[in-house]
Length: 568
Ligand code: GLC
Image 1 (cartoon, rainbow, N blue to C red):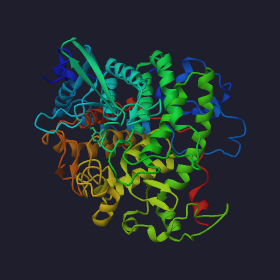
Image 2 (image 1 turned 30 degrees about the horizontal axis):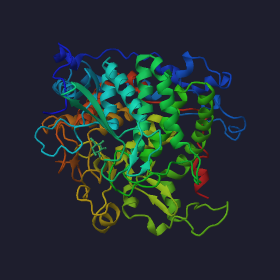
Image 3 (image 1 turned 90 degrees about the horizontal axis):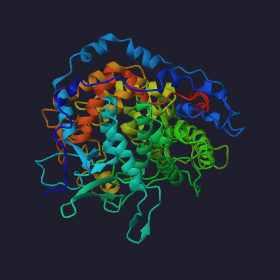
Image 4 (image 1 turned 180 degrees about the vertical axis):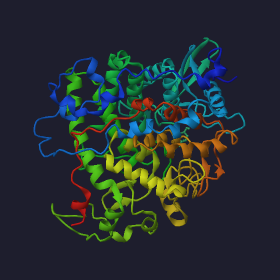
């Protein structure tokens, strides 16, 4: 008997779910987020409870002196992004009033994926693929996979399951975690959990995986980040501050932060990781400082800043976060950013420079620049590259990290527009026939052998190695709306609508253009389903964006203007 208990339909009248959208409950209006600098006048480290949920400027908490070097900077990104999105009736009209038939189908499938624990919905199963014989761990609730499901439920006015999920996972965080004889950090959140049913005792139990059962035995660095991001989304959507302010959630946040803010031998503010510690959960040469983790880290710090209480323990973390955010944004915007101009600078780099005057700080050898990048880089556009560490720049494009950079405002407004320009200019490569390419380009031949360790699942243009993942559609749509280009999201959604349901909601597609259903792709992959729903709901009502987007903090300036700083 399957230990899994799912519900066929949660509520009567579920057929109408496609149209069951309720107004966003966001208690904190989008407009409130927009000028973070207004908060500068508030007394430092003393923000009233109600306002504790605004996106406070780092400078609210700043240790005097830190911001002094920062000039004023006029943002190109005002309400413009969202306003212009709202003002383009042509783009909305097509999908506003008549839901696509796939929407109702997606809601039904999402409902079927709900997992109950002692009668309460606590998450969604990764894939509900009856046809597949190989279940592996797709019968579990993955923390990262649940995020788009959670957003769909929140946008639909069903916050209960999200609250239960947040509470269950923070409870699991408290478990003692071991890999062989080694004890993992207290703050580690599970990659996934499962509900098992004990028929004798007639009760449900939880089993969690913190990496000790995962392929490669890597702890999921992204789980804790997603948990904090989701806690903010829940709070923002419902206006219910009690969950984020509860002792359990405050402790949960601090434990996660303690892991990633700890002092060590680091010389960079970025977070050092092993391969396979996030969505790309197999070896793919993303060890070091992968963009996905750095962008999520940045977003997490900003979300935590808005939710941590100003008590003795909270204050200490707030101060650390503020310092880290300044260093992290400087580092990312300076060293991870690549556009035509910067590529030309790197191409002409001198090597073996020593001391503080070095331009090529990481001693990247220009010969290591891959050929493809010279053709790929458009004159207009740019992006955060995959990884930067000593003598190493991974020039690959990773969609998730770049979308999160836009949503968290790690990308300056100019950088956010440049990322969108790149997506438009390189549509065929990065979107192709099925949105969205997880990474570009694929590793092939010798490089694939060396970098993936001959991974048969990650062959070229398949799975993580240049495959196309429909789940990324929600992140892409959110980024499009934030940058005022909803029509691009519409184009991508049209592509997805032409195939996703017909193909049985696959986990991923293969091929240069993403034309083939992935070799080992699960069908009815929940996050492909919920990702589509979230994308649709975001387009329909862009005010949902506030749940997963943070406006620019004007106190955090880009270090120097690119044109003047790099062409020396
Ligand atoms: C695969 C993906 C991972 C996802 C899991 C469950 O392992 O790489 O990101 O969380 O499947 O869908």
